[in-house]
Image (cartoon, rainbow, N blue to C red; front, side, top):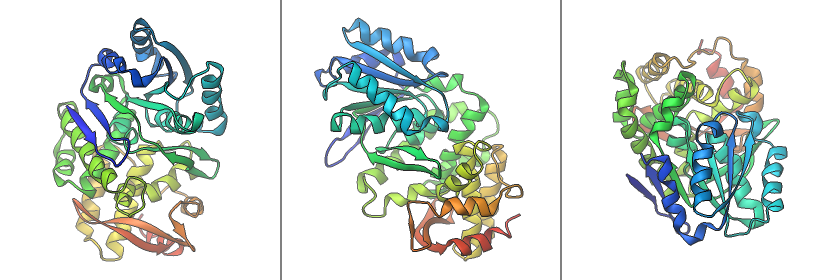
Length: 354
């Protein structure tokens, strides 16, 4: 299946459920240049890197690679410079391509490198994790982290295309799959109750639902990104549900929680806040908490150092004069954006969450 992201400039296709060894068919187009840099990590490149490299080399492309350590610790300026230097040393031009192969970390940093090397070269992303397939690889957000905040330095830079082979999910650990599950639950809460219902009821084999869940999640993101590509209109804010609080927990407790685990906690916490201010009923909070718990994601704040998390919350990009904008649920499938709270109010609410 192909999903087209229709933008004023730089529209692109997402290829969903295509075999990895067929990606070379797209590179037959001249616009991707003669030199390809694969940015991947130690976990993913040994599985799929040589397949792509050999396929592109057979076409006559000159292929290089940068293999990074897995995880958020890789999203730094030092690693960004490493990628750019490889581009420069191999005399890559503006018509050449950086291809990211892996999860959200490599697409974030590889995409950012693509956006600033020669003021922008081709960027192709091949997401191999469930989290990246449903979320991180689409939408054009690229970034690196700073010591006191996630994704604080970056750019909006759309890929030339996104290529998804669902078979790559078979190699993922249960922990890695659950990261993607967290984002899928988010899509169900913000926009599509049918997704939430599957996550609430499914008890046997989530694999049978992969294609539907990935496709429907991407359609939601497509709709939002097309209407508000660079977060100018406030519409894209809907995608931040669970992430405002989640990012603060993730970086303040690093490396205790993965991104997906922190977002799960963020969704529970933000739904609790919503119930406290009367935007949703307690039943919605309990539903969200139970589905997060069902998928063995973190749901309790008992061991969260709230003061430390809220200190990092103050660095959030959405903070204005000590106040922060939240996306809060009204019901399953419907949220309210632009809910402004002070950090002190957030702290007072979350003290009672347990």
